[in-house]
Image 1 (cartoon, rainbow, N blue to C red):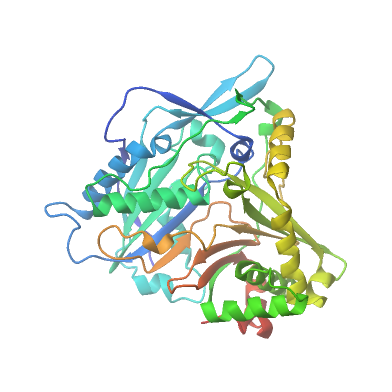
Image 2: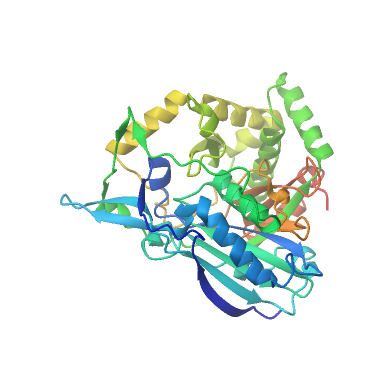
Length: 437
């Protein structure tokens, strides 16, 4: 397959062009992501036979609907602001100045939908479907906080979004994506507008100061990696859940916890780690429902805290699926409102940024996204998507991106690993028994 060609790059601003500038303070959940990369996720559609609106090309129509959507999601049209303080610290915030989002129109006229979906591994060209690749969140002081790329294929369209991770987590990312698709389908206002709330503790507003020394970090070096999407049907997931609960004599292990444990065990088995080597699975824990009162689902920002599962490789493999899934269950259940408050208060006093490693080792896995997100509801007016894929943002050896599958109750996991580990996983009979090809 040949590469893609860029047809045009333009800036899309909010339709209302409100001249007032609003400042949104950033929380520790957001600021700790300064040195990481953006969220990159996108949807693959079959090409519509007619434009979604009469006398309007698809590209023009998408720009217009994006402009209307930015009226509600106005932080995405802004930039990061940075204030250097007298004590050699820096305070970051969102400057809602309406500078606009980047919109890229591209074409890959020799690439078909089948070329994206049918290969055993995710083809490398998918990475080129996303703009601003390799840009860190901290670059948001000059780079757009949102960049969209619409790539026309032979018989399809891929809409890829790159969103600065300091502005939105996965929940907010897909809230925006679905709201944009709703604006594309209808001329009415979006039905679930976002809610913005400044950072506060005990009703006192903070502008958190980060030492300059914390802002320096090398780009991690990674070995050659490959990606593959594993598909799990509703029935196979139910079997894993039943097995995990039966092994532990409980009914509290969820489908997601059983599936995550199943994946974790296969990766570690395929990596061939020594029995006494410690292994970690870093999972995002949603904060919205844990606060009192809980944050609404349409709260726009980052409300996720990393949780770390730790186990010896031998323990993980020898004690069975149920034991591993139970550790996931306990880790998630232990993160209460009290734990969230402790983190916030301690982080303000001693800021620690994620992404300190300069080289990656093969003891860890990293989960992103969630199968609970309403991915396949993003209909822009020409039908639901046929697939979802992630881009190169934050791709490390061991990153596992969870999506809902196209069939109800199914789950797809886009796994990024070394070629040797992926090959071993596909020869792992216990793991592949739950996978549907």
